[in-house]
Length: 384
Ligand code: HSE
Image (cartoon, helix red, strand yellow):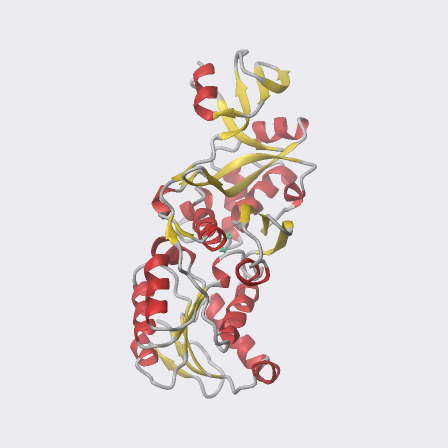
């Protein structure tokens, strides 16, 4: 097997390292020689002996000897060209590019089918956690009922810092940024867009439907204050940025939102930059995957597994129908903080200083809004 790695940043270099260090063992596993022929990136890095460095990705794609193209540059412009051109040249493709697959998955999967090549993308969701392969292969007997997850490590790290170190959002963000955790475009993390990319891919994989990413509503954690975090704790909850997907009558309910999670739920105990994915299935019931969702070797681990999988003969089927509608999941319990009492069906009421805090019964968001006249009321979803 001859491989071209395009993108020699954190993950790309990690892939080259693992393939070099583990070469002998991996070759025994897949019963063939593994050669990294090219490392392609804008800036030259020290590559192990024998790997050709190039700046031009066409060198990789035009080389007839290359079997697998690994795209690790990210973004939705050049990366899309690289993948589609590689597929057109009958190369198998491995990518970690969540944004690209969320937006253009359908086009890319169809191109791969037409050209009879593999496209694997485990590293796009949950870093090294083998959740997509598990959904696609190990759980094939099941119909997916619901997917719930903490899919963004950066925001989980920020929420953890706010809670443990008693910091407000801006202070915790600045620490996370200093550690290099925050994406170059912080909105991807903070506004839930990155998590929306990931739940889109998971939902596509689980519910076998192509999803129009633009229909997914995502809000992040910028509006989570220490005040609400402290009230949540007093009532037995913790803030998490939850991504969720489940079938609704004429489509899928999918959204990403800062949500109060009951402290008794396992998902509430997932702290720092860890990710968790819970998948409810009709036969095997609930399965939970927990692990690191980012990092050089964590992500490279998934990429290397995918590269090895290109030796299998059966291609993954992406023969999905289009999902007609995607809605936010608005039937929920809600946390409401207002400065005057309100008349709603509630499970819990708590009052401190001038604040009135409610955990409502399950109610449609629109119905709830009609009952809250105060524009300044703070509202979050609650997951019990
Ligand atoms: N910014 C992402 C996260 C990186 O925090 O989870 C991994 O996809």
